[in-house]
Image (tube, rainbow, N blue to C red; front, side, top):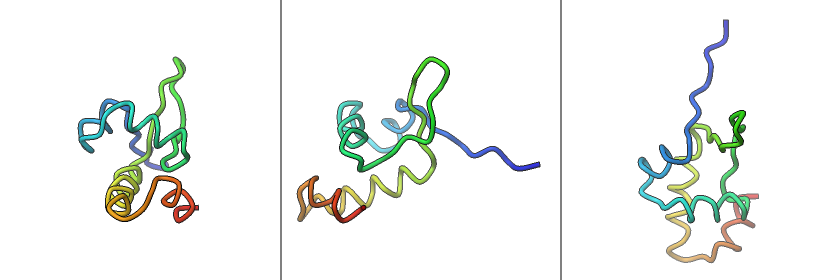
Length: 74
C-alpha cells in the first residue's frame, strides 16, 4: 500500500516559510510554486517540495526579478 504524501495548507506553508499569504498567492499566480491539489472546499494544498522551491526563490531574489526567476525555474 503506497504511503500518502504529506500536503500542506497555505497556513502551514506560511508558518514554516515565514512568507505572507499574499506572497505565497503571488508566487502561485506567477507559477513560481504550484499547488498539488485542492481540498473539497477549494483550499490549495502544497507538496513537501514547496519549501525547497521557496528557498531557491529567496536565494535568486537577491540578484533576479520574479519574472527572471520564473524563466529560470521553467
